Length: 342
Ligand SMILES: [Zn+2]
Image (cartoon, helix red, strand yellow):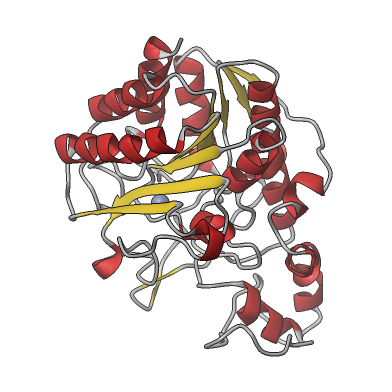
């Protein structure tokens, strides 16, 4: 299987992070890239650099206002006397349907959901190349490959059309799905990350052409708290095209695979022409976030179960944080997938 990654994706190196109000090192470290590259290579992937895809694929799922903000906010932030080294919001609108602030501080609050995604001078280019890796993988599948893997870092599934959140800036899975739509009437996105894919859900919430399905730790007591509940089913023409499967904390392989079967019942009824797998590896039992208890062999079985559906698949890296098995978990998923792929 081809894998896509550009070295620019490693430059973003966020420092700040708050966990229950306490300052901690940011877990979305560049070192994740090394582990994931090693994991992809062990699974037999060849790593290729994506082309520069311009802003087209990104602006297809994000507002121009937001993209302009992402590109320029760091430079503007630096002009504020005494400002922090990274862009971090300190005020958020309760409702986002009012006026648009002119100040950098106001816009940071408007466009950034939480303190997990500080923006530095490298963030825009890293996020853009991450999205281009997803775009290249999607084009590879459109050209006839049964599957391709995008080593997307920074990840993307918490990014809405105009909001960054949870380590995410550009929604790489949404970028891939929108590209697949050029040839495919219907595209399904299956998100197996530990956390609910709230940004992806938000982008496609009112659309019937992209089915969004997410398996994740129950947000009633877990990030992202305000999204990911079973009663979120889509809206307007998209009603019935969003499906959330919240799982009890510490759910292990059997429960995860059972939920995956339920997810595929819905996906089968949608009859998609192509699939995007939002592949978080943080559902792992040893992941620092500790929300679910999927094992390394479990990821292999998840990969098998997805490949068995025989859908052209773009596999997009989402979460999965530093722990000894991070690379092995990617190898397990890709090997399981490859073993069952047609
Ligand atoms: Zn996650």
